Image 1 (cartoon, rainbow, N blue to C red):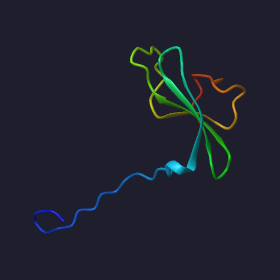
Image 2: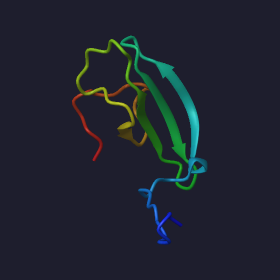
Image 3: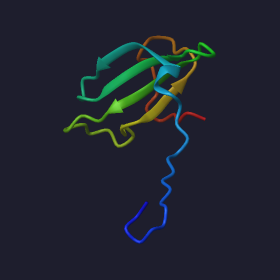
Image 4: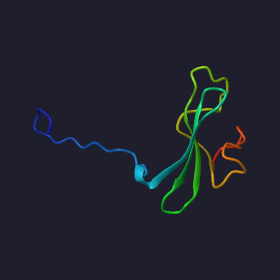
Amino acid sequence: MTSNGTSQTTTTPNRPDAGAFRLEVLDLLPCGCVVAMQRLAATGVRVLSLEAKGPHCPHLLHRADRIIRLGTPAGPFDYDEDVEAA
């Protein structure tokens, strides 16, 4: 309740529960960015994501909290920087 007697509702975006993901690999790229390979617990689908951008990373497509690939890549960090997840 606010000071004037009205209630205030806060909404948050729909995000998956942290327990829905199982971390498999966390690695540092040569540019300083951190990537993670996680698996969705319910479906077993792998998610490769950029978790943090390195402070001196020159790659424009490296953005924090970006999904790089869904499914199983050929190698743990085999991804094409020009491909966006559908």
